[in-house]
Image (cartoon, rainbow, N blue to C red; front, side, top):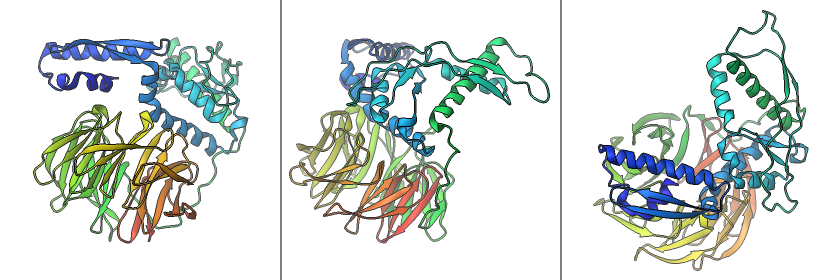
Amino acid sequence: MLAHVSGFVGAALAKLDPEDPAALKAMARLRTECTTAKEALSADTEVSIPVLLPSVQTEIRLTRGEFEGMIRPTLADTISALERSIRSTGVEPAKVKVVLLVGGSSRIPLVGQLVAAAIGRPVAVDVHPKHAVALGAVLSASGVVPSAMVVTPAPAAPTEAASTGAAAAMPAPMPAGPKITAAPTAAGPWPRRPAVLAAAALALVVVIAAAASLLRGGGSGDRAVPPPEVPTFELGVGTQSIGTAEGTVWLGLDSATVARFDVPTTRITNTVRVGAGDGSVALAVGAGAVWAVVPEAGTLARVDPATNAVTATYKVGSQPHTVIVAAGAVWVSVEGDGVVMRIDPATGAMTPVRVRGKPTYLAYGAGTLWVTDGANSNVARVDTTSNAVVGDGSSGECPGRIVADDTTVWVQDTCQTSTIFRLDPSTGKVLGTATAGTEASGMVLARGSLWVANQSEGTVSQIEDRSGQLQRTIRVGSSPLHVAADADSVWVVNTGDSTLSRIAL
């Protein structure tokens, strides 16, 4: 919401003095107004956000449809996580009786609609959805862990989703919770605690037990995961991106850090901080450097691969998303500002290229920069000579990751998670589709093939580039998400078990 406001008021937010008490007060007020507007859209179809800054006083209109467009890509990830949870139990969605939504965001109508449409099952919202977070905190702080529980479930009040998958109304609140009886332990009854702590702990355990019962449906537990079919190396750190160059693998870690993976020893040998805090990192390698975007800080860092040191940092804007090196420049999609920033690697000069909507993923081929905008179902084409948008492409409803070369362009659809669209490089029109598993994630083009990580299946699909036909499926580690290629290998980051797999070309 704040990024949406920033897109309208321009540099007014960036120019606020963080040492000025008046500026801090204005910013705090604006954040509160954004929160209020977001919550109001759960009931209203349109809101106005008052902006009262020292240099700007205005109101910004926002409709529910616009807000839903902003959050839909993130909600798609949530739906994928829910589907993975169900699949991991070996239970068919039809056997799930109801999905209980908790947390404040469950009050957003689109959340219930997408869940119901995705798995075809009813949803229910707790009467106090925000309390789940508080109950978890209380349970953690109290140290009270009952050894046994007797739970008598109370009936929920679900709302059935339409058979066509159309948007359903938000369900009615659930009735009073289940009746709970605590079973004493061998050492005696629970230690005495304030009533609110005991009640909170009990309530949370009931929610967890009910969720496990609904998902497992009486199953026998998690299934064994087959081992990888290719060499797979332990990383031991959370990894958010990967890049390769000159026989070296570079990793963007989730602690605002870039790491060098030494291929001969299969170990991380060097790390360098590229931003403050624990933010994620998106990276690209080229033009004699490693380029690392830290979205939370709005910065791009340049790392010298010879010294493993940051040699320059650029402030690129609000919510930078992806970085690539192509056509003699470094390109950064800046989602919050609606621009793609072109950076001259020799001089550091920055040129913003305005595109429609919220740019996310980038690819390059045949003199064209391809930019996806899932919030607006758009794929923009930018001429890298004139820095101008020369047309829009078409793909699925929610275009996400994209790869390209001089002859082909492939785009994932984050709403149809198994579908990848092939676009005409000249016109951006759809030429055909390919299917890779059930949840396609990272992609790369190498040796005439499209390599696609299937996150929920723990595999990588090799698809023939020209025909779109599946050639083979290779098992890697748990939850493969990011891929990159060098002259002789495809490298795969497995986020589920913090490993790195290598597929020989």
